[in-house]
Amino acid sequence: MLKLTTALALGFTLASGAMAADYDRGASDAEIKFGIIVPLSGPLSAYGTAGTCIAAYFDMVNDRGGINGRRVTVSVQDDGYNPAKTVDQARRLVEREGVLFVAGNLGTPTNSAIHRYMNQRKVPHLFLNTGASKWDDPDNFPWTMAFTPSYAAEGRIYARYIKENMPDAKIGILYQNDDFGRDYMDAFIDQLEDESLIVSSVSYDTSAATVDSQMSTLKDSGADVFFNIASPKFAAQAIRRAGEIGWKPTQFLVSVSNAKSAVLDPAGLDHSTDIISTQYLKEPTNPAYAEDADVQAWQEFKANYFPKASEGNWWDWSCYSTAYTIEHVLKEAGEELTRENLMKVASNLDGFEAPMLLPGITVNTAADDFAPIEAMSLMKFDGENWGLFGDVIAVD
Image (cartoon, rainbow, N blue to C red; front, side, top):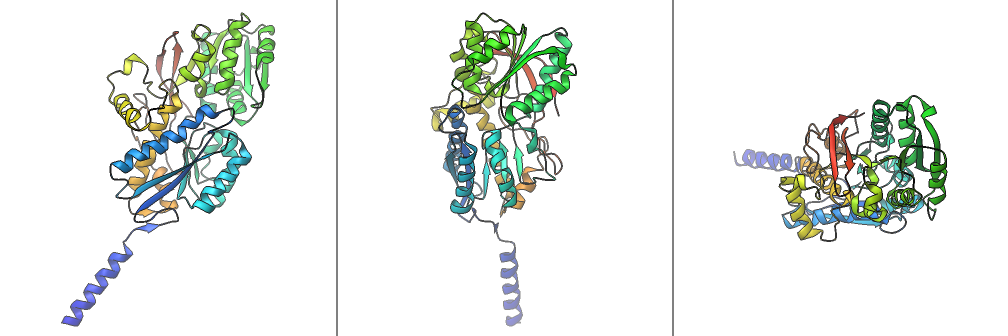
């Protein structure tokens, strides 16, 4: 009888061991390690705080006990918005530092440079801060998923608005000469249907000093609508230059560059008045959200962990929503901290309410749908604040 009891006890112990935590490299009983690649230097360094914000968020998580008792270590790497450096940093994180996953990376050309690598290595490449449509391709790239709404969907929203409200528009377009710019423009033209409405389109490279000459070309074209498909530095230059040369078209500004402090303030609020853009997040500076629970939680986080944040830069508070979603995925993964299980959890988010999302907008993913957020609202800048108008628009 004693031998039988001992055997049963041993069998129970072995069974318990079989149900113990399952780890891939980058996870253990004590720690979870992941990485972020952002431009802390270079022409788009303003965006770099999106990475330091996520790291700060997990400082808060660790102070509260971590994830299921494990400390989260976040390695933030600088690529200067240079795709070659992004490759180097991805290899560093995956091969040298041995992170479990990479999340929150910023930029279309930079993430494109490591797109195939991350999938070949089968390392989750999650919740990217870029809206390129290519990220929603689970059949060919099952380890990559964005977080922000797609640029293509946003481009279609502007085209639809112009068709319905400005049918005789003469449109001038400034676009960044890469996948980021072309994603917006191709979808915009496709939705517009009548390409003859576009009287001029000019591009710029991120290595350029200014876009002054491009703005003169657009003004001279006779365009009365300006679609500004530029990253923050160049978007601000374009808005200011339009005012300086006396060009007063109706302006549409892509959402990645609608931050008040980083773009509209440098451009001049007088030049920025009446610009139309889109949003999917609550804006902390907007008096309408002064008593909002999400915004109050953000303010507490900012005061205690991220004091350098600017409430006028959307990426400084959108990262709060991204980080919260990363935390949720890690919690749901439980004791199975494998790369495969992380992707399984990330691709089964159904009506997930991440903080800072506008009412009516939730995070939804599936095995065949890697586009987490597919709704936005139009808004107009009144010289002091952005104001939403119309209904939330579902996009695809």
